[in-house]
Image 1 (cartoon, rainbow, N blue to C red):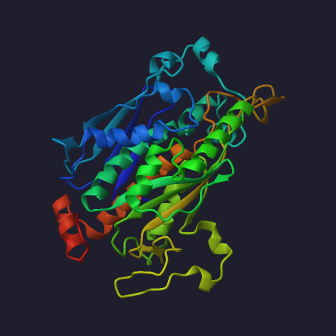
Image 2: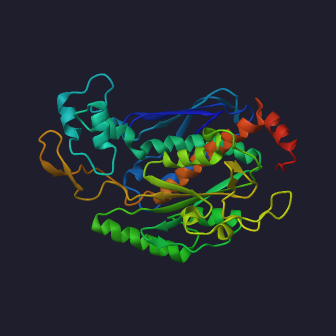
Image 3: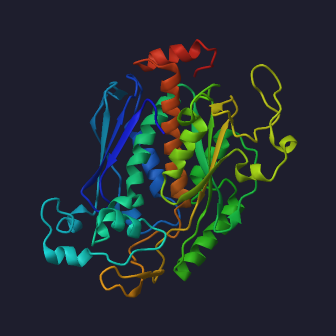
Length: 386
Protein backbone atom coordinates (compact mmCIF):
# COMPACT_ATOMS: atom_id res chain seq x y z
CA UNK A 1 0.00 0.00 0.00
CA UNK A 2 2.73 2.49 1.02
CA UNK A 3 6.12 2.35 -0.69
CA UNK A 4 8.12 5.21 0.86
CA UNK A 5 6.07 6.30 3.87
CA UNK A 6 5.53 3.93 6.78
CA UNK A 7 2.48 4.07 9.04
CA UNK A 8 1.91 2.26 12.32
CA UNK A 9 -1.13 2.51 14.58
CA UNK A 10 -1.53 0.88 18.00
CA UNK A 11 -4.29 0.93 20.58
CA UNK A 12 -7.57 -0.67 21.62
CA UNK A 13 -11.04 0.82 21.45
CA UNK A 14 -11.35 1.14 25.24
CA UNK A 15 -7.64 1.30 26.01
CA UNK A 16 -5.93 4.41 27.37
CA UNK A 17 -5.00 5.86 23.97
CA UNK A 18 -4.29 5.39 20.29
CA UNK A 19 -0.70 5.90 19.15
CA UNK A 20 0.32 6.54 15.55
CA UNK A 21 3.67 6.91 13.79
CA UNK A 22 4.27 8.20 10.28
CA UNK A 23 7.80 7.83 8.93
CA UNK A 24 9.19 9.24 5.70
CA UNK A 25 7.69 12.72 5.66
CA UNK A 26 10.13 15.26 4.21
CA UNK A 27 11.42 17.98 6.52
CA UNK A 28 9.90 21.44 6.32
CA UNK A 29 6.23 20.53 5.72
CA UNK A 30 4.08 23.11 7.56
CA UNK A 31 1.61 21.46 9.97
CA UNK A 32 -0.76 23.42 12.22
CA UNK A 33 -2.65 22.28 15.30
CA UNK A 34 -5.90 23.17 13.53
CA UNK A 35 -4.97 21.06 10.49
CA UNK A 36 -4.63 17.99 12.72
CA UNK A 37 -7.85 18.75 14.60
CA UNK A 38 -9.94 19.57 11.53
CA UNK A 39 -10.17 16.12 9.99
CA UNK A 40 -10.73 14.44 13.35
CA UNK A 41 -13.62 16.83 13.95
CA UNK A 42 -15.06 16.10 10.50
CA UNK A 43 -14.86 12.35 11.15
CA UNK A 44 -16.63 12.65 14.49
CA UNK A 45 -19.39 15.20 13.91
CA UNK A 46 -21.52 13.59 11.23
CA UNK A 47 -25.01 12.11 11.31
CA UNK A 48 -25.65 8.52 12.29
CA UNK A 49 -22.91 8.26 14.94
CA UNK A 50 -23.31 6.78 18.42
CA UNK A 51 -23.29 8.66 21.72
CA UNK A 52 -19.58 7.86 22.07
CA UNK A 53 -18.75 10.60 19.58
CA UNK A 54 -20.02 13.18 22.07
CA UNK A 55 -17.64 11.75 24.67
CA UNK A 56 -14.49 11.54 22.56
CA UNK A 57 -12.91 14.92 21.85
CA UNK A 58 -9.94 13.54 19.87
CA UNK A 59 -7.45 16.12 21.08
CA UNK A 60 -4.28 15.04 19.29
CA UNK A 61 -0.93 15.33 21.03
CA UNK A 62 2.32 15.45 19.10
CA UNK A 63 5.01 13.32 20.72
CA UNK A 64 7.76 13.63 18.12
CA UNK A 65 8.65 14.77 14.61
CA UNK A 66 7.35 18.35 14.66
CA UNK A 67 9.02 21.55 15.84
CA UNK A 68 7.85 25.10 15.34
CA UNK A 69 4.97 24.00 13.13
CA UNK A 70 7.11 22.04 10.63
CA UNK A 71 8.08 18.41 10.14
CA UNK A 72 11.66 17.55 11.06
CA UNK A 73 12.13 14.70 8.60
CA UNK A 74 12.12 12.20 11.47
CA UNK A 75 9.17 9.94 12.37
CA UNK A 76 6.10 11.88 13.51
CA UNK A 77 4.41 10.32 16.56
CA UNK A 78 0.86 11.24 17.60
CA UNK A 79 -1.28 10.37 20.63
CA UNK A 80 -5.07 10.35 21.00
CA UNK A 81 -6.19 9.72 24.55
CA UNK A 82 -9.42 7.80 25.22
CA UNK A 83 -11.90 9.89 27.22
CA UNK A 84 -13.49 6.71 28.62
CA UNK A 85 -10.22 5.07 29.67
CA UNK A 86 -10.79 5.54 33.42
CA UNK A 87 -14.07 3.59 33.30
CA UNK A 88 -12.35 0.70 31.54
CA UNK A 89 -9.05 0.73 33.41
CA UNK A 90 -9.77 -2.39 35.51
CA UNK A 91 -11.03 -4.39 32.55
CA UNK A 92 -8.23 -3.29 30.18
CA UNK A 93 -5.26 -3.36 32.59
CA UNK A 94 -2.19 -4.50 30.59
CA UNK A 95 -0.78 -6.68 33.38
CA UNK A 96 -3.59 -8.03 35.53
CA UNK A 97 -7.35 -8.05 35.04
CA UNK A 98 -9.42 -9.01 38.09
CA UNK A 99 -11.84 -11.88 37.38
CA UNK A 100 -14.86 -9.75 38.29
CA UNK A 101 -13.74 -6.97 35.95
CA UNK A 102 -13.12 -9.45 33.15
CA UNK A 103 -16.52 -11.10 33.66
CA UNK A 104 -18.28 -7.73 33.54
CA UNK A 105 -17.11 -7.02 30.00
CA UNK A 106 -16.57 -10.54 28.62
CA UNK A 107 -18.07 -11.17 25.19
CA UNK A 108 -18.84 -14.73 24.08
CA UNK A 109 -21.50 -14.17 21.40
CA UNK A 110 -19.85 -13.26 18.05
CA UNK A 111 -21.54 -10.73 15.78
CA UNK A 112 -22.16 -11.83 12.18
CA UNK A 113 -20.36 -9.48 9.82
CA UNK A 114 -17.67 -8.61 12.35
CA UNK A 115 -14.16 -9.92 13.07
CA UNK A 116 -15.34 -11.64 16.28
CA UNK A 117 -15.60 -15.31 15.34
CA UNK A 118 -12.75 -15.56 12.83
CA UNK A 119 -10.55 -13.54 15.18
CA UNK A 120 -11.38 -15.80 18.11
CA UNK A 121 -10.48 -18.87 16.05
CA UNK A 122 -7.28 -17.21 14.88
CA UNK A 123 -6.15 -16.23 18.40
CA UNK A 124 -7.75 -19.15 20.27
CA UNK A 125 -9.50 -16.52 22.38
CA UNK A 126 -12.25 -17.43 24.83
CA UNK A 127 -13.22 -13.76 25.28
CA UNK A 128 -14.12 -11.95 22.05
CA UNK A 129 -13.08 -8.66 23.64
CA UNK A 130 -9.49 -9.68 22.88
CA UNK A 131 -10.50 -9.36 19.22
CA UNK A 132 -13.13 -6.67 19.02
CA UNK A 133 -11.14 -4.07 20.96
CA UNK A 134 -8.61 -3.88 18.14
CA UNK A 135 -10.96 -4.72 15.27
CA UNK A 136 -13.12 -1.73 16.24
CA UNK A 137 -13.20 1.17 13.80
CA UNK A 138 -12.07 3.41 16.65
CA UNK A 139 -8.50 3.02 15.35
CA UNK A 140 -9.46 4.95 12.23
CA UNK A 141 -9.36 8.11 14.35
CA UNK A 142 -5.58 7.79 14.39
CA UNK A 143 -5.47 6.99 10.68
CA UNK A 144 -7.41 10.20 10.13
CA UNK A 145 -4.85 12.16 12.18
CA UNK A 146 -1.95 10.64 10.23
CA UNK A 147 -3.80 11.38 7.01
CA UNK A 148 -3.92 15.04 8.06
CA UNK A 149 -0.10 15.01 8.09
CA UNK A 150 -0.10 13.60 4.56
CA UNK A 151 -2.66 16.22 3.52
CA UNK A 152 -0.27 18.93 4.74
CA UNK A 153 2.32 17.67 2.25
CA UNK A 154 -0.27 17.58 -0.55
CA UNK A 155 -1.42 21.11 0.28
CA UNK A 156 2.18 22.30 -0.02
CA UNK A 157 2.34 21.16 -3.65
CA UNK A 158 -1.18 22.18 -4.67
CA UNK A 159 -3.00 18.85 -4.42
CA UNK A 160 -6.50 19.07 -2.92
CA UNK A 161 -8.55 16.14 -1.62
CA UNK A 162 -12.20 16.00 -0.57
CA UNK A 163 -14.97 13.44 -0.17
CA UNK A 164 -18.74 13.15 -0.45
CA UNK A 165 -21.46 10.57 0.14
CA UNK A 166 -23.10 9.45 -3.10
CA UNK A 167 -25.73 7.21 -1.56
CA UNK A 168 -26.93 6.20 1.89
CA UNK A 169 -29.62 3.70 2.83
CA UNK A 170 -30.80 3.43 -0.77
CA UNK A 171 -31.07 7.21 -1.20
CA UNK A 172 -28.81 8.34 -4.08
CA UNK A 173 -27.57 11.82 -4.89
CA UNK A 174 -27.62 13.17 -8.47
CA UNK A 175 -24.32 13.65 -10.29
CA UNK A 176 -23.58 17.37 -10.00
CA UNK A 177 -20.81 19.12 -11.92
CA UNK A 178 -19.38 21.37 -9.21
CA UNK A 179 -16.09 23.24 -8.84
CA UNK A 180 -13.80 21.54 -6.32
CA UNK A 181 -14.07 24.27 -3.69
CA UNK A 182 -17.87 24.33 -3.82
CA UNK A 183 -18.08 20.54 -3.72
CA UNK A 184 -15.81 20.44 -0.68
CA UNK A 185 -17.69 23.24 1.10
CA UNK A 186 -21.08 21.62 0.48
CA UNK A 187 -19.88 18.26 1.77
CA UNK A 188 -18.34 19.76 4.90
CA UNK A 189 -21.54 21.71 5.62
CA UNK A 190 -23.75 18.61 5.31
CA UNK A 191 -24.29 16.28 8.31
CA UNK A 192 -24.20 13.35 5.88
CA UNK A 193 -21.47 14.80 3.58
CA UNK A 194 -23.89 14.98 0.65
CA UNK A 195 -23.41 17.83 -1.83
CA UNK A 196 -27.12 17.97 -2.72
CA UNK A 197 -29.24 19.47 0.06
CA UNK A 198 -32.52 17.84 -0.95
CA UNK A 199 -30.89 14.40 -1.07
CA UNK A 200 -29.21 15.03 2.29
CA UNK A 201 -32.64 15.66 3.84
CA UNK A 202 -33.88 12.30 2.54
CA UNK A 203 -30.71 10.58 3.80
CA UNK A 204 -31.27 12.03 7.28
CA UNK A 205 -34.84 10.75 7.21
CA UNK A 206 -33.54 7.28 6.28
CA UNK A 207 -31.11 7.40 9.23
CA UNK A 208 -33.92 8.35 11.63
CA UNK A 209 -36.09 5.54 10.28
CA UNK A 210 -33.30 2.97 10.66
CA UNK A 211 -32.51 4.20 14.18
CA UNK A 212 -36.15 3.79 15.18
CA UNK A 213 -36.13 0.25 13.79
CA UNK A 214 -32.83 -0.60 15.52
CA UNK A 215 -31.15 -1.18 12.16
CA UNK A 216 -28.06 0.08 10.31
CA UNK A 217 -27.44 1.50 6.82
CA UNK A 218 -24.70 1.33 4.21
CA UNK A 219 -23.98 3.42 1.14
CA UNK A 220 -21.38 4.67 -1.31
CA UNK A 221 -18.71 7.33 -0.82
CA UNK A 222 -16.48 9.16 -3.27
CA UNK A 223 -13.04 10.76 -2.81
CA UNK A 224 -11.79 13.31 -5.35
CA UNK A 225 -8.23 14.69 -5.66
CA UNK A 226 -7.25 17.54 -7.96
CA UNK A 227 -3.87 19.02 -8.90
CA UNK A 228 -2.01 15.74 -9.27
CA UNK A 229 0.92 15.46 -11.69
CA UNK A 230 0.88 12.80 -14.37
CA UNK A 231 2.78 9.58 -13.80
CA UNK A 232 2.34 8.89 -10.08
CA UNK A 233 2.43 5.15 -9.55
CA UNK A 234 3.82 2.65 -12.04
CA UNK A 235 2.84 0.14 -14.70
CA UNK A 236 5.98 -1.95 -14.13
CA UNK A 237 5.05 -3.95 -11.02
CA UNK A 238 1.62 -5.00 -9.69
CA UNK A 239 2.23 -3.72 -6.16
CA UNK A 240 3.38 -0.30 -7.40
CA UNK A 241 0.28 0.42 -9.47
CA UNK A 242 -1.43 3.39 -7.86
CA UNK A 243 -4.82 1.83 -8.51
CA UNK A 244 -3.79 -1.25 -6.52
CA UNK A 245 -2.38 0.85 -3.69
CA UNK A 246 -5.51 3.01 -3.49
CA UNK A 247 -7.77 -0.04 -3.62
CA UNK A 248 -5.86 -1.66 -0.76
CA UNK A 249 -5.99 1.56 1.27
CA UNK A 250 -9.73 1.97 0.84
CA UNK A 251 -10.48 -1.72 1.39
CA UNK A 252 -8.57 -1.54 4.68
CA UNK A 253 -11.20 0.84 6.08
CA UNK A 254 -13.65 -1.17 8.22
CA UNK A 255 -17.02 -1.81 6.49
CA UNK A 256 -15.69 -1.02 2.98
CA UNK A 257 -16.59 -3.94 0.71
CA UNK A 258 -15.88 -2.63 -2.78
CA UNK A 259 -13.64 -0.06 -4.46
CA UNK A 260 -13.92 1.45 -7.94
CA UNK A 261 -12.47 4.35 -9.93
CA UNK A 262 -14.16 6.96 -12.07
CA UNK A 263 -17.60 5.60 -12.92
CA UNK A 264 -16.96 2.71 -10.52
CA UNK A 265 -18.61 -0.61 -11.25
CA UNK A 266 -20.39 0.86 -14.27
CA UNK A 267 -17.24 -0.12 -16.18
CA UNK A 268 -18.72 -3.61 -16.36
CA UNK A 269 -21.85 -2.40 -18.14
CA UNK A 270 -20.39 -0.06 -20.78
CA UNK A 271 -18.78 -0.73 -24.15
CA UNK A 272 -15.29 0.49 -24.94
CA UNK A 273 -16.59 3.45 -26.94
CA UNK A 274 -18.90 4.39 -24.09
CA UNK A 275 -16.19 4.15 -21.44
CA UNK A 276 -12.76 5.34 -22.51
CA UNK A 277 -11.83 9.03 -22.43
CA UNK A 278 -10.60 10.57 -25.69
CA UNK A 279 -7.21 12.35 -25.50
CA UNK A 280 -7.47 15.94 -26.72
CA UNK A 281 -3.86 17.13 -26.65
CA UNK A 282 -0.28 16.34 -25.61
CA UNK A 283 -0.92 17.77 -22.14
CA UNK A 284 -3.29 14.87 -21.48
CA UNK A 285 -6.59 16.77 -21.44
CA UNK A 286 -9.53 14.43 -21.94
CA UNK A 287 -13.05 14.70 -23.29
CA UNK A 288 -14.34 13.13 -20.07
CA UNK A 289 -13.03 11.51 -16.91
CA UNK A 290 -14.76 8.15 -16.74
CA UNK A 291 -11.39 6.52 -15.87
CA UNK A 292 -11.21 8.63 -12.71
CA UNK A 293 -7.73 9.99 -13.42
CA UNK A 294 -6.01 6.60 -13.52
CA UNK A 295 -4.72 4.62 -16.49
CA UNK A 296 -2.27 1.74 -16.41
CA UNK A 297 -1.82 2.11 -12.67
CA UNK A 298 -0.74 5.78 -12.95
CA UNK A 299 -2.27 9.23 -12.68
CA UNK A 300 -3.05 10.73 -16.08
CA UNK A 301 -3.45 14.38 -15.03
CA UNK A 302 -7.22 14.36 -14.72
CA UNK A 303 -8.87 14.56 -11.27
CA UNK A 304 -8.57 11.33 -9.30
CA UNK A 305 -12.00 9.85 -8.49
CA UNK A 306 -12.22 6.86 -6.12
CA UNK A 307 -15.48 5.27 -4.99
CA UNK A 308 -16.11 2.81 -2.18
CA UNK A 309 -19.13 0.76 -1.14
CA UNK A 310 -19.71 0.68 2.63
CA UNK A 311 -21.78 -2.09 4.17
CA UNK A 312 -24.33 -1.60 6.97
CA UNK A 313 -22.67 -2.01 10.37
CA UNK A 314 -22.72 -5.45 11.96
CA UNK A 315 -24.21 -4.47 15.32
CA UNK A 316 -28.01 -4.05 15.25
CA UNK A 317 -30.49 -3.75 18.09
CA UNK A 318 -31.32 -7.16 19.54
CA UNK A 319 -28.41 -8.75 17.69
CA UNK A 320 -28.33 -11.03 14.64
CA UNK A 321 -28.64 -14.80 15.09
CA UNK A 322 -25.38 -16.28 16.35
CA UNK A 323 -24.09 -18.83 18.87
CA UNK A 324 -22.59 -18.57 22.35
CA UNK A 325 -18.99 -19.83 22.27
CA UNK A 326 -19.15 -21.00 25.90
CA UNK A 327 -22.46 -22.87 25.91
CA UNK A 328 -22.60 -23.72 22.23
CA UNK A 329 -26.25 -22.72 22.25
CA UNK A 330 -27.94 -20.47 19.68
CA UNK A 331 -27.97 -16.86 20.81
CA UNK A 332 -28.23 -13.33 19.46
CA UNK A 333 -24.90 -11.69 18.62
CA UNK A 334 -23.34 -9.33 21.15
CA UNK A 335 -24.68 -5.77 21.20
CA UNK A 336 -22.75 -2.69 22.33
CA UNK A 337 -23.11 0.97 21.49
CA UNK A 338 -23.15 1.33 17.71
CA UNK A 339 -23.61 3.86 14.95
CA UNK A 340 -26.65 3.75 12.67
CA UNK A 341 -24.36 4.35 9.69
CA UNK A 342 -20.65 4.78 9.18
CA UNK A 343 -20.83 6.10 5.62
CA UNK A 344 -20.27 9.86 6.28
CA UNK A 345 -17.48 9.13 8.79
CA UNK A 346 -15.97 6.50 6.48
CA UNK A 347 -15.78 9.15 3.75
CA UNK A 348 -13.48 11.26 5.95
CA UNK A 349 -11.37 8.19 6.80
CA UNK A 350 -11.22 7.32 3.10
CA UNK A 351 -9.94 10.84 2.42
CA UNK A 352 -7.17 10.27 4.95
CA UNK A 353 -6.16 6.98 3.34
CA UNK A 354 -6.13 8.55 -0.13
CA UNK A 355 -3.99 11.42 1.22
CA UNK A 356 -1.51 8.92 2.66
CA UNK A 357 -1.22 6.97 -0.60
CA UNK A 358 -0.89 10.11 -2.73
CA UNK A 359 1.73 11.64 -0.42
CA UNK A 360 3.59 8.35 -0.56
CA UNK A 361 3.46 8.32 -4.38
CA UNK A 362 4.73 11.91 -4.54
CA UNK A 363 7.69 11.15 -2.29
CA UNK A 364 8.37 7.98 -4.28
CA UNK A 365 8.47 9.76 -7.64
CA UNK A 366 10.03 13.12 -6.75
CA UNK A 367 12.15 12.27 -3.68
CA UNK A 368 14.06 14.78 -1.61
CA UNK A 369 14.76 14.96 2.11
CA UNK A 370 12.98 18.31 2.38
CA UNK A 371 9.79 19.85 1.07
CA UNK A 372 11.88 22.43 -0.82
CA UNK A 373 13.75 19.67 -2.66
CA UNK A 374 10.53 17.81 -3.51
CA UNK A 375 8.95 21.01 -4.82
CA UNK A 376 12.03 21.74 -6.94
CA UNK A 377 11.95 18.26 -8.47
CA UNK A 378 8.24 18.61 -9.16
CA UNK A 379 8.67 22.06 -10.69
CA UNK A 380 11.35 20.69 -13.01
CA UNK A 381 8.71 18.55 -14.71
CA UNK A 382 6.71 21.67 -15.55
CA UNK A 383 4.10 21.02 -12.88
CA UNK A 384 2.46 24.22 -11.65
CA UNK A 385 3.01 24.77 -7.92
CA UNK A 386 1.05 27.05 -5.55
